[in-house]
Amino acid sequence: MNARRKHRPDATLPPAFSLLKSEFGDFLYARIDTEDGPPLTVLSAFTREGLDPWQEAAKLQQLAPEAARRHLAATIAALPDALQSVDEALAIAGRLVVLLPPRPSLTMRLATATRGLRTRLSRASGR
Image 1: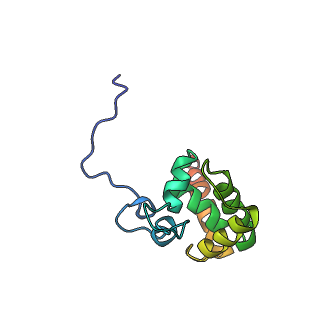
Image 2 (image 1 turned 90 degrees about the horizontal axis):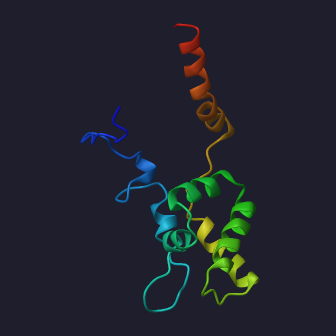
């Protein structure tokens, strides 16, 4: 059996992972720094830390705003060339987390979480 995946020209990324249009675009492309020169964006900060930017943005979206702010501030403060104090990192993170799309409602989160379970159960019962 060939372990290689065959190229499927019709395969596309989900919209959340599209570079051209993403619900996380405003957040990921926002500048962390406010200085002139090459921008340090949220996307580049996550990438420098070895994190998938879209997955990290989705995780932050699921958190309460204060938890998201603290989590993002920790990432900002951990950057190798970070010159910000913890308080400055928290202020920057506070400015940035408001750019995240609204957190899905509890009903939507439950529907998403149980969608796969319903599919597996229906397959198991032969429906």
